[in-house]
Image (cartoon, rainbow, N blue to C red; front, side, top):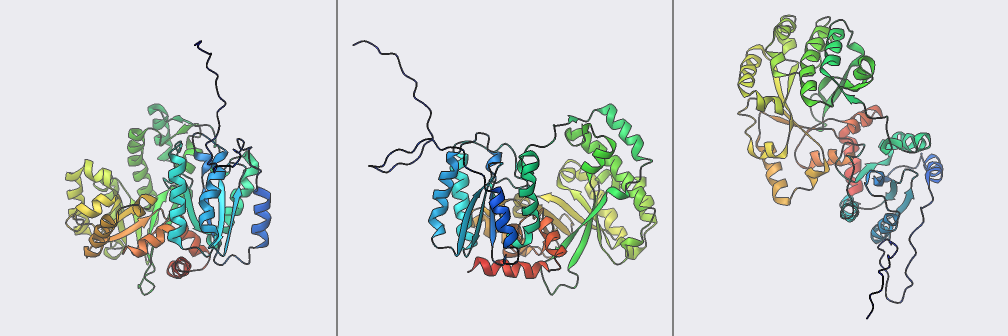
Length: 430
């Protein structure tokens, strides 16, 4: 038998076809729903109660496939029949938004996880999503995120990307020479326009202070745009860590000009251990009364602690003598489960919300919650809560202090976080 030349078959998207059905053609690029969704949202802005939004970040997938939209609609169809309302919109940057109402949070989460697993079995994400989550999906209350959603959709027409789309060209990493120039400028620069604060809020409505304290931090990217627009300050980790020491001293110098704002409010300062033991901090300390020192929380990054454990012990002794509180910043569930934070003499411990927390096994979640409950002198903070999901997780597992963009959004609307979560919890149980 003669060997026939092998014929290359056209690549086809894998779509399920039932026996007897005609195979579907490779799907065309779907029409965009940007304008239709905008009109719907603008007409329904007074009837948002109970509406939730799922944002599927398909634009972050390395390999795009328009057949994914069909697969997603099939996955969503299984829960759509039991919903009060559900509609799927395809956006011009290839993301998908799902508006829904009357579906349990656990049900929608399960569907999103199924979609994520299906997509990531074929390709991978190029980066984390715009909400700083390592997931292909984000779930949020529409009423609490209405303005942001409108701005996002309107922004798609500007560059075709929205918040998921292409950004400015990647900058070059900062060089040692360029960093030296910035350090010289910092000494004569007014940092006050770049010093921001974000509240750590107590979920307990009966708490004496709903604002536990305000974390003061520098908007590094804004500072970068002002002092070094052509370079990325954070790209080289070693140089950035070196720079934070100079930044710490500049912050303390700025605070020395007036410390009255500390009166009546607790503040958190992100400082390196070496900074706390420096003469710059001693000068700052000398300007504070005993009462004011009691209003200052020193936030210490866990990596700094691990790398400089002897200095940490010195800082603990110094802070105890002078009346400062300590927060270990950036801990992980492993730290919660295996580290005795009370023995480490910290008053607060902050971990950051990611969907990976909710994906822990039931056994690990129970251990996690039990450890948090067992700590009497160390209070836990869940930071970077950009969606209601993180806040609900904190409430469910005994974390009473929260921080993040979603907290800021709720407060701007004149609501308490506790009341907002009460509404969200009732929707989950519908």
